[in-house]
Image (cartoon, rainbow, N blue to C red):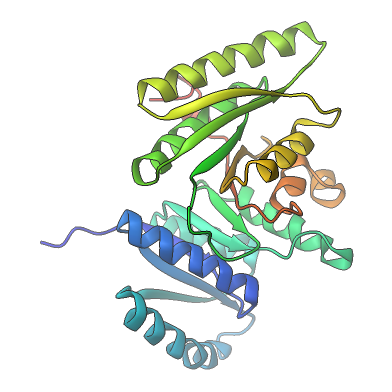
Length: 275
């Protein structure tokens, strides 16, 4: 009996960045033995027939070139609710989304991506370009004082199972005693966890004057990181969407480094972050 494989979802809008996301998802799926689903949203159901016809050449190309079947989910709705519905329906392990970054009026694409991401239980990887050859060889893992920060570790572990990964635990200096104490606790926990799992890691205190988001992006660019792994803000506000939360800044980074966004889950914080 064939075992059902994990699903990786890609919101699809016939754009170049959508193709980048699909390329990442295909590469990830081939390595992890997962399946890929395209989520295309239409305003009216009658547009679905046209979308299926436009997508058929892409489905045939992927199956021919990669021996991988693309699942199509063409739904009437909007990106903020429908993608979440499909993710829940398919029990998707993760999503991969393309974004244009923050350029002029395209600033709002960053906030749209973030709003989609925080509506889902599964993490989303946001990309701005095609996948690199050494996918996830170096992962930048910002560490702050929040207890939810530990939830990223299980995803670092998951990635390390399939990729030759080194995790760089990065933090910045602070003069707040409580912040210092809690950040140090998270760093020790993270290092012990990764080391126990046999994952290469180091701790880097960034010396710049910027925020953790700013300095993490700079460091990731310096070491040519393949991924920045972050938590989204718990109960993120409308103001954050409009004015720019740290997550929005990171996912739209000018270095075009892919970013995996993990959403806080209450069921994983009951036992210090892990079951």
